[in-house]
Length: 243
Image 1 (cartoon, rainbow, N blue to C red):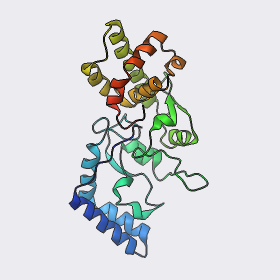
Image 2: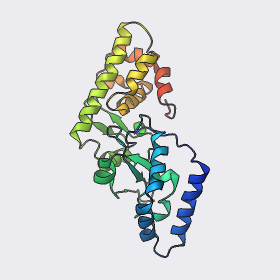
Image 3: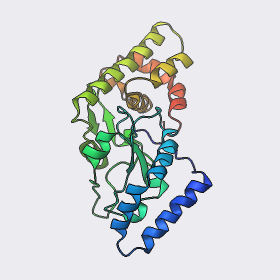
Image 4: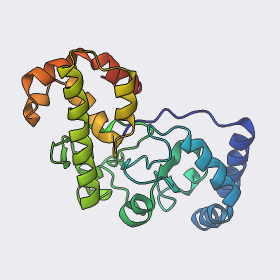
């Protein structure tokens, strides 16, 4: 889950969403009104999807798993929990059908103080809460990482784990080839890395480089040192991350 940089909406769309929210706020049955209004807002959903598509780290892909195509505009905070957020821009996430309709649905775990445990792609960097093993499995680092892995089924989908594993190996190959050629990672390498099956593998690799923990994942020390020298190139790919 790579943190997105949320862009301001066009003024007309922003005003339209505000009007929808005002109608829900004025309703005596907010949840019912919100659901009905969202269900009938086909054109609005289409506009929101176009805006979200422009912000993906990998075009058109789910902001939760980064393996499947983003097809749905998901409410990070479900309508059932807060209907007033139904048309709030900061609450909209581009999701694949699996993450939205089969995994997350209306699950939204919170801590005892009511703070979300599920990671928000618009606010959070998953690599601060979980790490990617070389097997393709995610390992929790925090309670929020654990809940996110569970709610989204990130380790439960064998095809997703396999895709992350292949992507991790792809990152190692690209960096290994550059090291053997005794040259820095260049623009062509970066372009190749951007279009791995799951770009989130590269995202977690970048964090491993910055945190000096590649050795824990059986990466040869010489390759880990080479990757560290190329950290600026990785930072350029993920400008919203603290690397």
